[in-house]
Image: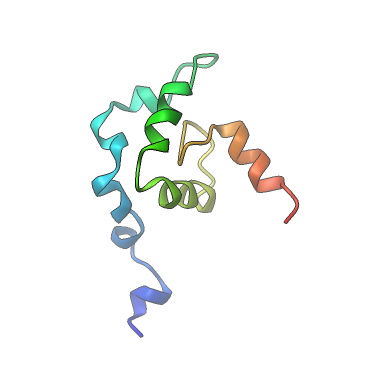
Length: 84
């Protein structure tokens, strides 16, 4: 078993970004000003093949700002604290 299967490299961990739809939109789309809508970013995430990997990355790295994997900061916090 290759070592990067057990311990993924940073490059492996971010490979989902290559085909992600967010790469075609600016960061302000996914990091809106406080009180602004996240609806459009979430719609784009919903159509993205990398959505699950993006969400896993955000949860693993405790991303606290912006829309990741189709979820806002508050939604990720609720997911993190939900009973399993």
